[in-house]
Amino acid sequence: VQAALQDENEWVRHAAVQAAVNLIRVPAERESALGPLLDDPSPHVAAMAAYGLLDPAIADMIGLDSHLSYFQFQTIQTWASSVQRLDSSQLPPPIVIQRKPAFLDTARKRLADPKTGQSEQLNTALSLLLAQYGEVEPLNAALEKWLAGPKDASPPMLLVGLLLTHDERYLPPVKVAVDRAESRYDLSRTLQWRRGVPGSGARGLRRDINRRMRALPEY
Image (cartoon, rainbow, N blue to C red):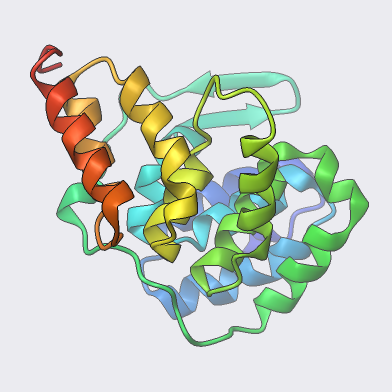
């Protein structure tokens, strides 16, 4: 895996990052392997490296398993026949990490590069990674953009934003997710997003979830 992470072909590096996320369990070793790849010239590789550095609960909430369950080489993609998902409700809730690893400087510079804005995946991955370490300005900017636009979906990174910041400003995306939930299982996942959020808005959200629970099938 270490050799493949340095391969000249970007798709070999991309697959190597996916393998590293699955195989390297010690956080310090994973940071050492993936941190330098935040500066990879390929946005696909850099985004996958950023996703791989996220807390397991955050990774589950944004569906990281879907990013790890396929192999891509240029325009060719193949998918795993089955995917074993984590259940973030069984994981400790993510908290803001106080330490500041060296790779955060790379993430900041990459996110500030105008070219990064051309890759939604890379922009999202870097924004989440910085927020995990308490730098929520990119998430706040994404929230303001969402609030000013159509509310036809709830970007997962904004749902994570509520969990990390406990800021009521992030409740509207969660309310959209509640309204669009198709089963009680979907609604049960929204409950974890409001954990630790104070105020009447969060209490009102809980009432909305309970009301929807009675109207939806279990799955």
